[in-house]
Length: 89
Image (cartoon, rainbow, N blue to C red; front, side):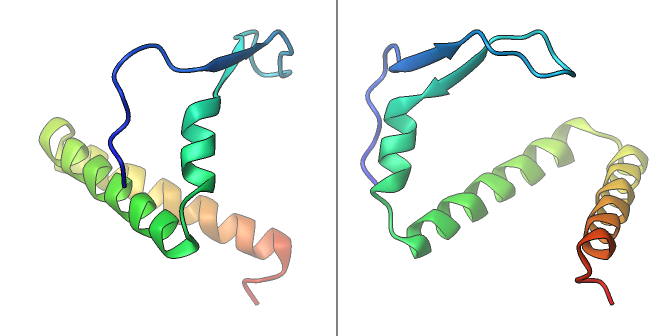
């Protein structure tokens, strides 16, 4: 994957807000275009790279107890979504 240039990204600002947030949404158009140029396999590899990075950050910054609690919450939420969609049967 080509390295992105350092600088200000092309951002599209939206003043639309969601019911849960009054924050302004921003979309990095250049990052979106770069992602769309990737093959599905490259996108999966990029997601895997980001998940591994996220894990390394958590290992360095969160206590084992907090990491375990967060993991259990993620598993519980994933099971709830699967059951709600009918995939968990």
